[in-house]
Image (cartoon, rainbow, N blue to C red; front, side, top):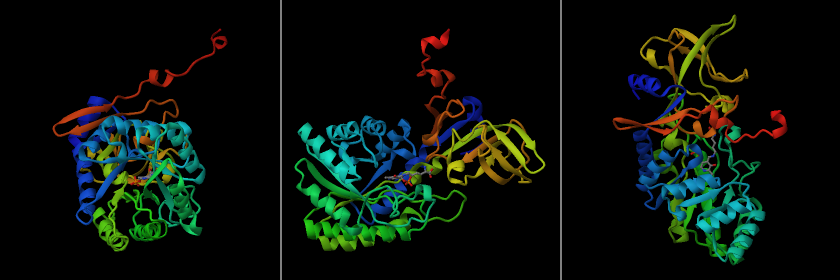
Length: 418
Ligand code: LLP
């Protein structure tokens, strides 16, 4: 994104502002899909809505042919509304209400089961509705994804999935097979996010495929899909990271080896979120003031961790640019301080940047995934607007929240008004 354009957008729409590039999203999707399709034709991407569920972005990815990995009823309804076929939607989470299960069954989407308790509830509700629920199990392969512990899900101690260990997952399939109102259609795993060591995906694929072979040989269960989840990391610092091509080259041969043995060909499903949208957006913010303490130089910007949480929550590194000083030399070291009243609200630490003044425009890079989608209204701050660069034009894809929006659902008991 050109600095000149970013400056113009900040003037037109104000700050803080999320700016997305439609072209980048489409390209990422195509690169990811073709890396796998060229080696395994029956590959399908189910975009992970939690990374960014803005309606416009979901429409773009539906146009590209993506299915959806959803985790709540709102995400489910969004996926259906943008036109994704129910059989390409998987509903995953570790804690589902009966209301959620019922809606999934009625809609005909795949319910990704996470516990034995849940299995019996799904069967009971399907029975009540006189329908067959299409199910898969989330399986925990006990693999350490070597990423931030907050986003590691495949660990043996994790809350997710049924363990392969001790025959737990196999037993789940055995029981499900006997249940009248269930149709077993797949297997799912997701070991974590921002994974940069491809070896852990190989380990996972091997464990899952061994298991799929067992399902075939011992229970005669044949699956429509094998869903290996998302998790491929992106480069936040400009460092080299494995591409989808490398990932595909490493895991598809493992898949093939087992598929040749089981003698049927399921679809391969993948659920990337970050890789599709992560580098498609920047967050623009304005410098309110610059302050030098005896220990540090702070740049106080007009955004905080309510609007962008990754730096604070995961100690994540995001590159920072001074948009109106793009080409100037870095001569100072700053902390970029958010406007939330907590000392932890530092968006970037010890960054070498050009000399900064009040009014400068800062861009926080690579915020397309888990940026807006994790935002809140903490400190009673309306959330930013989102705009999409689309060829030569720019579209607002989410209006900036207003103070009225924040107050709208609040009610004051009558007595308090006296
Ligand atoms: N599938 C499942 C079941 C998931 O739980 C996730 C992410 C994905 C797919 C997509 O993973 P991705 O390709 O985006 O890594 N808020 C954190 C990331 C949390 C990821 C949660 N699950 C962050 O900002 O780093």
